[in-house]
Every structure is written in structure tokens, then in C-alpha cells.
Image (cartoon, rainbow, N blue to C red):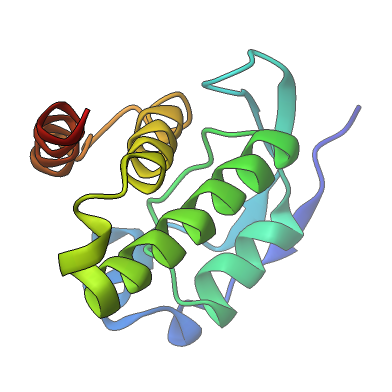
Length: 137
């Protein structure tokens, strides 16, 4: 299968990307095949997706995909659920710190997210939740 090319417009990149040396070398985007970090399934970071990512969403130009569409969707679902937990915690910390079901659910989500991202586990939050669960068990 031939790689598709789409013309790049570095003037549309984020400020950080425009300061990168890529601004001198990238004239077009081409499809980039890769294997999903989580499930190993082959996928493609298409030239069109790159153009949208770098020129519309203003993501850093050296960013690369590591998750297939399916795993990326699952990771986003987990992130939304974590955001909900964080918001609930901010509103009702005093009562939720005794709610073992809530704490366990939040800890499970944090642990599950680690399957999708190879960096930055929230160790401090996981430790806090583990201590609170043990205290209230």
C-alpha cells in the first residue's frame, strides 16, 4: 500500500513546533505505520490525521501515536472517569475519604490507565487511596 502524502503548513503549527528544527525539514506529512503499544495491533498515523493534529489541534510536531484507535478510545474513557472521580473528591473529600467503594473504584481506574500509557503513573494518588482504603476496611 502506497503511503499518502499531504502538504504541511508549518505556519499553522504551535509556537513550540515552529521553534523546532522540524520547521526546516517537514514539507509534507506521510502515513506512518506503527504497532499499538498496548495491544500490538498494527495501525497508521495517517497524513490527514497528522495535519489535523499539528495544524488544527496544535499538538507538538514530533508527537507520535502509540495507541490504536480502539485502545485510544478506551484510554480516553478511563481519563473521563478519572476526571469525574477527581471532581467528586474536590466537592466531598471529607465524606468520600471513608467511602471504600469510591476509593477502590478510583484506584482501579488509575491502575487500569497504566495499561495504556507507558509513562507517569500517579503513584502518590495511588498510595493515598491505598492508605485510605486500608484505614477504612
